[in-house]
Image 1 (cartoon, rainbow, N blue to C red):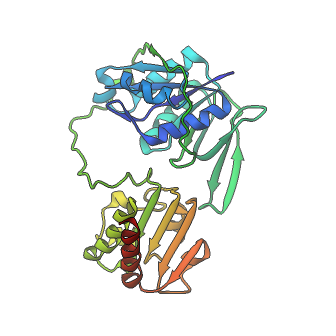
Image 2: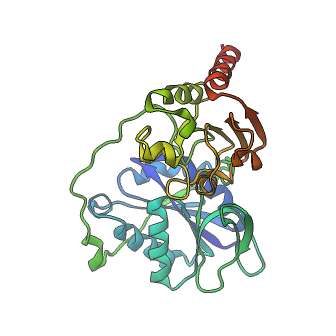
Length: 320
């Protein structure tokens, strides 16, 4: 069976959930070979082997931490030359998509971004994408070179599948461009204790109807009762009520959780483009004609300041 390279997103050896999802998809089209780079790369082996990686290629060098993107592209190119994979899978983060695009150019291959599903085909892997704000679903395959595909978080389940996970050192030769952009400083993001927005299984978002930064406490309370991430519409972000890093939509982040709760969000097409692939969508809005109700699974017509606290209380009561 052909081997499939999976780029590992990890923090000091702690593997992030989107990588484990990629391993599930990789097993559909071949044998997963993980590529872990940077500090703690060797510590990823146990988690990767437990989810189907037959082999783990590791490399650590100062370039991976001190410079942006290109050293990782050099490493993935070296992995492609060593393995000759049937495909390369990368998480669909901002950095992941840049790495994938640069790699595709390097190896003369086609690129598919933001896939939401992957299956084996007679002429290579077939990727499913949501197009035009999820109004259409497309199936595509790459016809030139080794397919390079980025996959959105929450597109596949995390399925344990014990495998060998043999660790092998990857030899990487860095090109001249590897040191072209240097990281001069890092500032840790203040932790809220909530899940990462793009990786969360549940997202609770607030919009213009929240009517003020101080009122986002109502949204946060519901999110915390569910163990969810907090999102915001562009209107709420532009008004300064919530950080841009939490914006869901065409000019923000795309999310695809199991459950998406929209409170006080009208449902403009720009917002729908960032959340329409959610598995179950619930909307709370006092305007019965709001466009958001056209795509929801469950809709509540009512004042969010009455509905959301009651919902939070009911959830906490059941949990208690």
